[in-house]
Image (tube, rainbow, N blue to C red):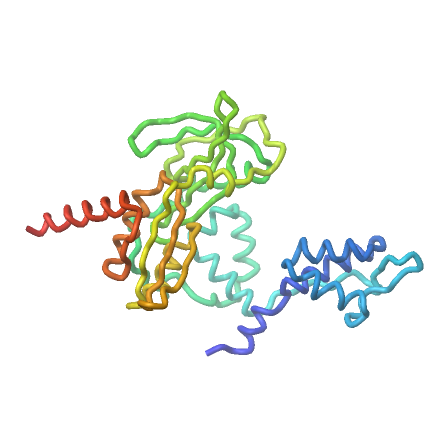
Length: 330
């Protein structure tokens, strides 16, 4: 049952509120032009925010700006923007997050102690033991490990600074690799409970490549004095490693097959269309060839709910896997 307080939690200090607050803050420092207001609405909001927010501010429907003789706009506010206190529900949600061992990956011990002190009289919105998870791997990353936390903190700092790191890494084949990588993006797998790091390496030829590292396999990190001058377009680099033939699945609606598949394959670039003749859905997945085996295992976990239509090489792997599994029961 949705309570008014939950509704307030989702609507308080919304994106539009934040956009208007930024515009008013800048307009209080110095008058801004119409173009600047529209640009800020697009930059900090959605694509259509300039069509919704800017006209209301400029027309006076939201009476927060005053037009100057030169055509620019200043803020009518006489005092700084008021603070944004947390609601009880927001505090309860934050207290619940403090019970998650992954919180230590993003905060220091002193920061966590300070948050616990601040929320000492708050009952958490939920507790970890309230949830019963299934279809999960048991070998999650060691989130509470001192070394694991230290590595995460260093990686986050390097991502912020665009700094290259010397990384010693234990490969899946048991080899230790030492190389210079630029941390670009972190990804968390809900099912396997592992963090993966998308990091860029630069070859001697100058060619750039995105490698995917399991955070738990990192043995050591060392900072360098090398920085990347501009942000890395990770998606573009990954597109270059995409398979030439995408995976094509036929998904039935049995046992919430479509909803489960969309959640399960949410990290992949994909297209979904309904097949009107059969009532099923055709899902086209574009994936990195380096992750084909993992994707194969994920597809097999759906059983008869999902049918692989192509490419033939992937269909052949499915048949071989199913055949080997069947032989185990003979």
